[in-house]
Length: 206
Length: 412
Image (cartoon, rainbow over all chains, first blue to last red; front, side, top):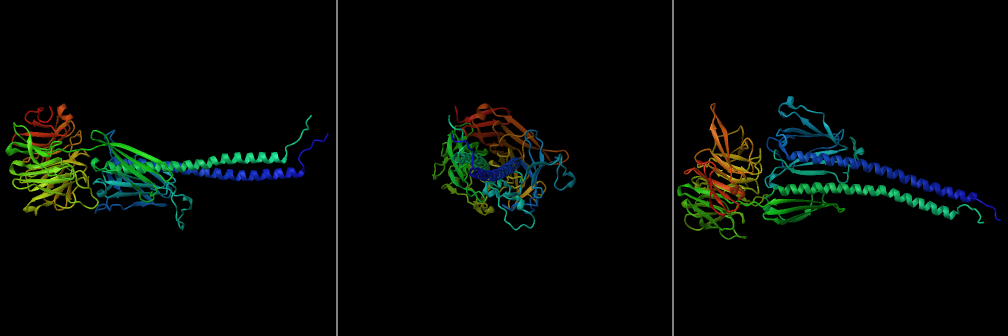
């Protein structure tokens, strides 16, 4: 009877070598996939928050009765002019909106902070007067609607292109590689796929 | 007995290959997850773009809407939209916006829009006659007190079958204006001679005007027209004092702060110094003062014309969408009608000076409300309001007898 035998040293070495190779490849792929998954999830979260912020802002702007900021220029709006802020800049849109359920107006602000990369919703006192700073008091702490945001813009649209109705556009944007956007950076930032999120709505109190 | 033996090198390699393939498949799920995420973003983008396009369509009168396709400006130039308009039921149209992303994500929004038609009415108090437009009739209708409606002058043929809409003037004095709401022009019927048709000027970037209301002062020097396609007011001069007959300007005038919503009617006093506009969209009345001294507080200048009041006149508890305006030519009383009430506005002197608004709402009878009022006029001699409806009925309401509404024409 032929004696039992295991692997030869050569066989064992080849098998272990192949196993190690497969392990390394699988490991690399696993790490890469995990990174992609994490990044995708993060971006999806940022995108979802930005979508929510843009949607909420546009819905509330539809009920706008008076816009306080950006302030209407003395000579009237320059249609299509963009009021915008990018990384390390700030932009706040403040307006009075109707609240049909109670009949009492709300004074709201949507603030983009380019340093913190967040969009906050601000709720002001009802007697808000743009000429009197003492009335510009917040009723509650700013509510963060979205973070990971890299830009926000607002622009009034020519009523002549909308059947005489006042329209305004709002935009929330995110960059594909926001960590590269630092002061002094020379690279051209590219937008995240699907960005910017843009809404153009009828605004009676423009 | 079979000999015990270990795995061969071939078996080991096969096992490793299977392990590798299984791992690859599991890892590919991460990649496809990313693809789904991108697709999800495109769905969000298509929804926003479709909403934007729908918002534009909602700002336009329903009869302006037309099917179209196209792309969006940068950065969404790869997204395509399609607008579909189809008849739904009665005067309702189904409006659809479909937006498709480069990867095939698609959002579809639908809404129903009513194609509004406007049938005006004007009083000729001295002749105890009203002139009105009726659905399906090319001629404006004349109705003398105590008589039956009869055909008046007819609109000239146009690209489509003409349909009178807003009317203004005094037919028995040979001063009559009628809007052809199907062809978007205006016809003047003089006492003698042929009718004259005026086509409104078209300004760059603006829609062809669609007039929902017309009114003229007692001397018929100026005609005021409410343009619902551009949310503004046009003036047609008909006097040498205003440079002869013609359109005053190449674009409609409108206040900016607050802006005028979709107008459905216009009224003016005898002197042509105060014009009232029914703002259907904002459910209020707006006032334009002409030939007034410089006004600042509470007014916005309309260059070369007058001053818009910034006040949106409405009853304390609000009103529905006003349809048409009638003005007492010799006082400051204004009438309008919504779906349920005849609404009257008077200005009552205050003891300390100035005037207070006094609103009176009179409920419409069910039959009149069901006929959908479209316009009204006031006869100051008899203290009577006449109402025209979209169902072709004309009603009379005597102010001295509150609650009394009498059908004069149309229906059974």
